[in-house]
Image (cartoon, rainbow, N blue to C red; front, side, top):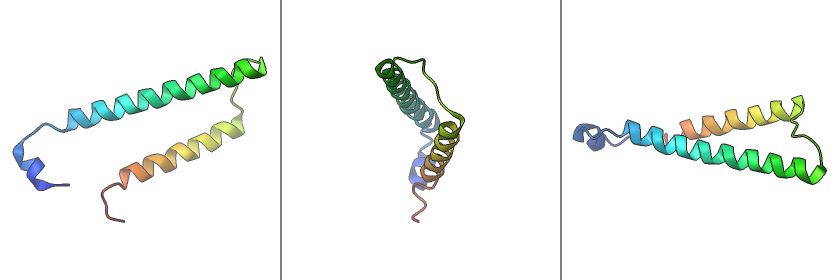
Length: 74
């Protein structure tokens, strides 16, 4: 993290939270839209099986881990 930003006293945390929240909201809405489209195409109720849920959970955990590692130089 750039120490100059920290010394400026600029309150960057709320900005990061707002941008992250907006991105998460957009991603969630897109995912819900795609789920609805699939359900309408198949003429069934939206359903996520346990296996799909576990796969999705692992994918999200990996994504969060990668986001947390941004800027570490790894």
